Length: 359
Image (cartoon, rainbow, N blue to C red; front, side, top):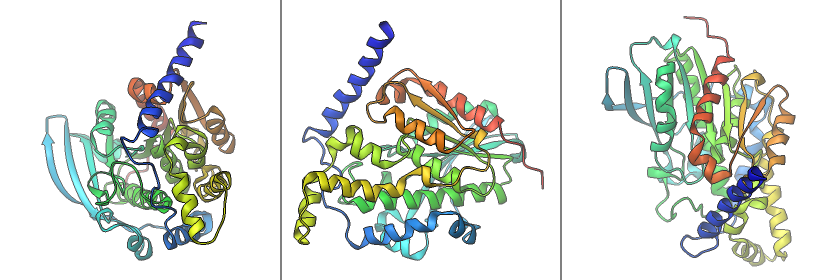
């Protein structure tokens, strides 16, 4: 009885937080400027290139050339920040806002350990995670395990946020797909660089919420085994925007009015169905099974108001051999309270990989 009441409390916290963030006028809704016009058509076409044949033909990815500065250094670790031009192709780069075309990373590295004896995990941003700080706090204690943390700032976030965008509220549906595609391309390039240029012995990719969806895609598409660690994440953005609490923070009427201006008459329910069709491009169950599914660990919350349980189980079913770990809580409370479980999953996922042969 107590556990049921606690579960309900976590679920209520998610909905109270969601009501405050998404039903008040404090922040604008997602997609207030519509679908994105030609950019959306471009991204729908390019999404088809994310699948095995095209991915293999486009390997290796563009190499990153970061320019680094040291933020701080101690006897045991060093934190550097770097910038590089996005590794997206010319067509995708042109579709990005100018502010998003320069990528930023923070890199926390243990000292006095050769890279072939270390692992490195690329941490991807959840919705609204504009800074490096939270992900560096997650990765910091892993230094003692000889695990390095690479934090990528997402396009449309932080210093890469377009001038007219307020907070995390993407202006167009196409921006969500652009953010995802650019994050995938940049992450793949970073992992390739860590492997071939820096010589790390093991690699991983993790992310929370939206970042977990992107981590799943990156891990799926990588040609060699990487630890893939999605935390509190759905199998598709459809779940977040059409089923979870974010549906209350979406500008459905603006999306309907844009279609009406094109002489396409739709009810709000038909608009939501069109959104489902567009966001089905983000369905990770359509992606290949990772090379080592044993090194895939999902951490999900028992009472998540944003991510329904069925969504997590769909991805586990699509990737036989992967593991789901449940933490007691909702989306918001688990984000705050279960960092130790996320770290444990990172360590365990990496332990399931073989060390790379030294050069």
